[in-house]
Length: 154
Image 1 (cartoon, one colour):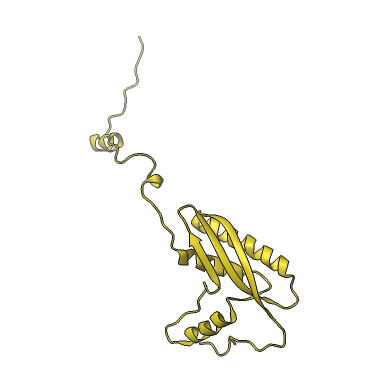
Image 2 (cartoon, rainbow, N blue to C red):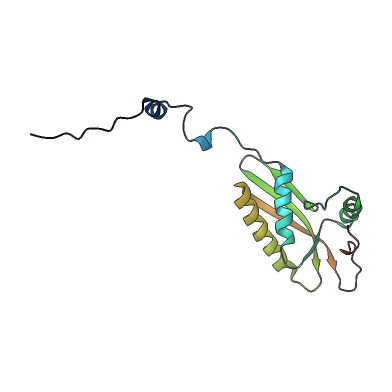
């Protein structure tokens, strides 16, 4: 005589939930995610500023306007200054304008900026970074006065 194991009785509501299939496929594939250019620009700007040898971002004119904007009550420091992004559905391209400290290897700083920006943008957005173009617009000399003295910013 063979004994058959009795199947445990299941709550019909649980069974119904398991057997009812809603939608189709993996939930991650339902819908679309769009990422604004400004989001990628902020990520890239922060990543570029983290590189040793990058003194500032943006052209002299952009930095001057930025200092004025930063001092306006309620204004905040623009982390995307000096960064322009073109964002597609799966890829992005970036243009960065940087000021480097005097004495650093511009080629080494540019390579480090590219690596840091690509890693940060790809990790945070899932977009493929197809290019990072870097324009070095100035060199900060040691004897030059700060355009944005930290002690005067509020």
